Length: 104
Image (cartoon, rainbow, N blue to C red; front, side, top):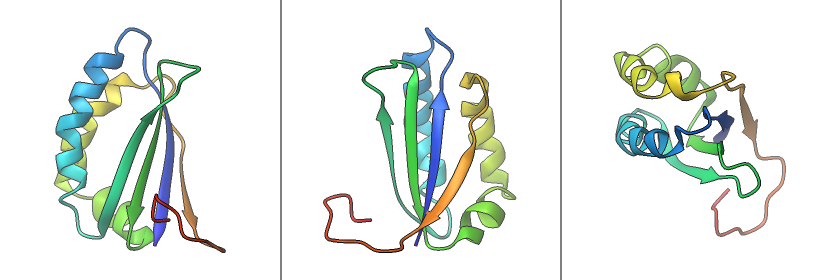
C-alpha cells in the first residue's frame, strides 16, 4: 500500500468552492485502478489549508495509471485552479504499524 500525501493551500476565499469541486472530483479518483481510499481534511489553524491522503495499491497506480489518464485531465480541470502555491505530493509506505482507526 502507498499513501499519497498532499498539502493543499487553497486561494483564500475560495474554500467553499473548492470543497464543492472536490466533492465532484472525488468520484473521478475513486474510480481509478489501484485506488483504495482517501480522506480530505481541513486545517483548524489555517482555514484555507487542506490535507489530502489517498491510499493506492502501488506507486505506479498513482504516478502512471492516474496521472497519465484522461480522468486526470478532468481532475485537473476541476481542482488545479484553486491551489496557491501548487502542492507538492509525496508518497509513503509503511515501515511499522499498529492497529489504527484510519486503517494505515
